[in-house]
Length: 565
Image (tube, rainbow, N blue to C red):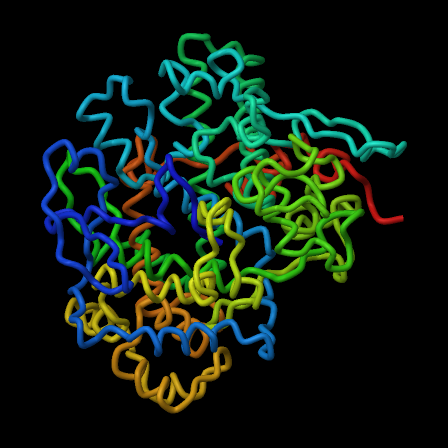
C-alpha cells in the first residue's frame, strides 16, 4: 500500500529531500512548493538514495495551489463515495505491493557511521533492485546486519505474546508468527522494535505478517538445501538466489498482471524497455524514477480497504485499518485500547498478541492453486478483496496516524496535512514532477501507444467526483498520481494502463535486470518450489505457492487460530 515511514532507514513516503541524479538535492519548502536544487558534495551524492527523472519537469504554472490540492484530496477521500472491490485481486496483494516498494527503495547502507562502506557498496545499496535487501540487509557477514540472523544462514523469527487469562490458543505464545524484536532497552518502544533491515515493514500488521512469511520462506529453503547436502560454504548464497528468483518470478507472473494491463507487462518483458534506461551499460546500476516512486507506484493507496475480515477473532470487518496500524511496532504500540497509540511508551504488549496472527487464507486465494484443499479456503463473506484501483481512497486515509510518518510525540499538523492524498499531491509540486499530460506526450513522442485522457474522462470518472473548477484544473495539469489512477479507472478496468502501466512495468523490468540474481539476465531459469506437482510441471509459482511452501502446506500454520466456529 506504500505508506510513509520513519528514519533512520530510507523514508520514501516522507522524505524531506530527494537526490535526483543530474539535478542535485530537491528539498521540501515550507509551503509545499518546489525549491531550487541544492548542490551536493561527492560524499553527499553517495549517501543519498539515487533517484532519476524519466520525463520532463513541470513548470510552476502547472502546479496546483494549496486550495486546489485540498479540494482534490477531499474529493479523493470523500466518505460518501463507496469504492467497489476489484475481482481477481485478493487484498494481500495490496500489502505485498508495499513489501515490494520497500525492497525497491531500501537504503541498505543506512548503517552506523563507524561502519566502513565501500563506494561500490554505497552505490549498490542505494540502487533499486528486486533482490530482497529489505529481508537480507547487507547479509550475515556484515558486522552490523549479522544481528538479523540466527546462525549466519537462517533469519531470526519472532514469538507472539499470549493474551492474558485466555485458555484458548490465543492465550499461548506461538513461535514464528511475529517479526523478531529486540526485546532489550529501557523503553517499551525500544524493546518492541523489529529486528529486521527495514522498519517500514513493521508499520502495519499486514506487511509485517508478509515479511514474517518471507522469513519462513528463506528458512524453509535453507532446510531443504541442508537436506540435500549443500555445502555450508555456499549455503546462504544458494538459498538467497533460490528465494530471490522465485520472488521475481512471482512478481512477473502473478503480482504485476493483477495490477497492470497484462499486454503491457508481456510487451515489456518480451520485447524490452522503450523509455526507462533502455540500453544501460554493463556496469550501470539502476536508478529510481521519481515518476514511479512519487507517482505511478502509489497506486496501492487506492487498493486499501477500511476494514478486513482478519482472522477468527477479528472477523466481520473488525480488523479495521486503524487497528492494523496499532498492532505494529513502527506506527503503533502492539497493544489494544484504551492504551494511547500516539504514545510510543503506552500499552503492555511488547510482541504481537497471538490473537492478531493473520489468517492468510483470507488474504490470498488458495482456491486458485489448490481447489481440492477445502481446509485452505474460506467462504466469500470472509475473504478480502482489494479495492479497485481508481481515484478514491478509503476515508480512514484522510487522517493518518502520527506514527505512520514519524510524528508520534509531536504536535499534530493541520488536519489536511494528515490526509494521505494531500501529502501525495503536495509531493509532486516539490519535485516538479511531470504532469500526467506531459508524461502522455513524452511517451507518445517515443512511439509508445498511449491515448491521453480527455476532459470528459476527468469529469465523468466513476471514482472521485470533481467540481467544475477541479475538472478544469486537472484537465489542464493533472498531478501524475491522480492521472494514472483516473487512467486505470476509465481505461484499464481497475488496472494500470497507458502512462501508469508503462512506467510501472518498465521500472520492474529494470529492477529485476539490475538485481544480483536476475530472471531478466537468466531467461532460461524456471521455478521449482511449488508444493503442487502439477503447477511445478507447468512452471507456475504464485504468491499462494510461496506461502504453501513456506508454511509446509499446513492449514494450521497458514491459519493457526483455526476457522470460525
